[in-house]
Length: 154
Image 1 (spheres, rainbow, N blue to C red):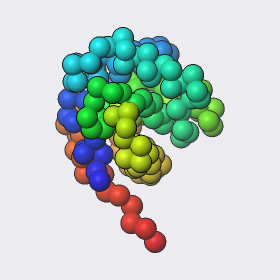
Image 2 (image 1 turned 135 degrees about the vertical axis):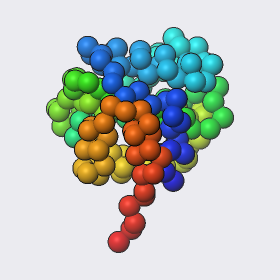
Image 3 (image 1 turned 120 degrees about the horizontal axis):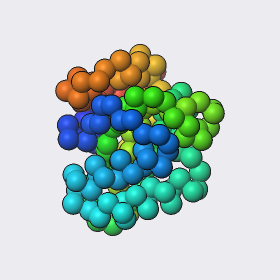
Image 4 (image 1 turned 90 degrees about the horizontal axis):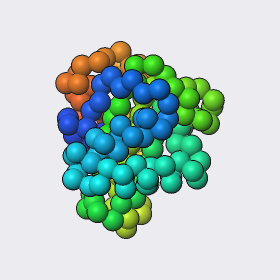
């Protein structure tokens, strides 16, 4: 599965300038609402609820906020590259500048976990993350995401 299976071109945000974590979540909720037709406030609240359980900042400058929504019928992803890293209360204490957000159907279960794992593996790949950090062009970012290749098992 490529990240392009989860993230459409319209879900790529190449140069966000949020001041804090809350603004990141608001921007993500607004874009998700535009893409899906869902209520922006509800999407935002779901992301905030998940963050209250523990930060989705997974380390190395990456965060993977996610939520389960009854209103979606398949997993939907968004990608945001932040102009300046912000504090996301990440597990390693490092600020975040790459954000991949996932919204899955409430009953997705294992599929949601597989999508989270796929995103985490891709974002742990330092050369791949460096390429994402190095571009502000939405077409180039989407091409990178769409052609990300699952690392082969050794």
